[in-house]
Image 1 (cartoon, one colour):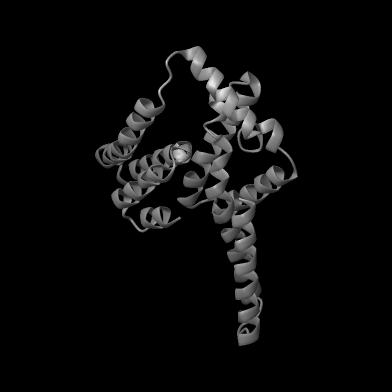
Image 2 (cartoon, rainbow, N blue to C red; image 1 turned 180 degrees about the horizontal axis):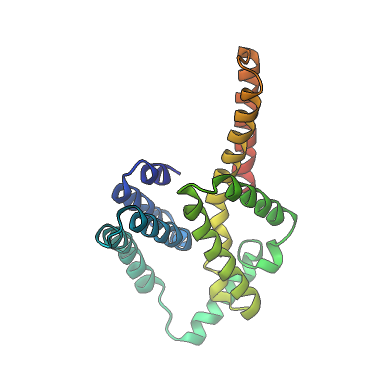
Length: 212
């Protein structure tokens, strides 16, 4: 979220570097990082009408990804495609609740989708919409591909992990909309009413983080 704030605050290069740094935490967030970087490039192109700054954004994202990718390939590189697929299948069998859409696709996932859908609607007409939409589309596409192919290596890309970012942001947008509506309904809300809204907001955002 901080990287997105920086980008919306017209600091695209710092925002991209911070986004890329997420890969140092865990490479499984590569899909989310790629989606956000692509959205940053698209928006910067729309802002400036030139390719230079979007190209720099792409270069920064690539520079962050390459060292981690090289390490993963060197340290965990397969000896053959068959061994790689077999090893992936073994890992998936131990964490189906994380890797297999057929296992985790249920009420929680549908609730997450509903929150994200509302968040996208609230972000409509702003630069936040492409930033949320790009990783969502990537996650949905790879999830569908994994369900169709049954490929265990695709499963280990954890495409649904984009919700770790999208659910809290969407929930924050929903809470903001509720607060704005509640406050505007009264010209001068009382301090007790503001404290109640603050506590409710914190509770809802905390729940969304756990849900995401």
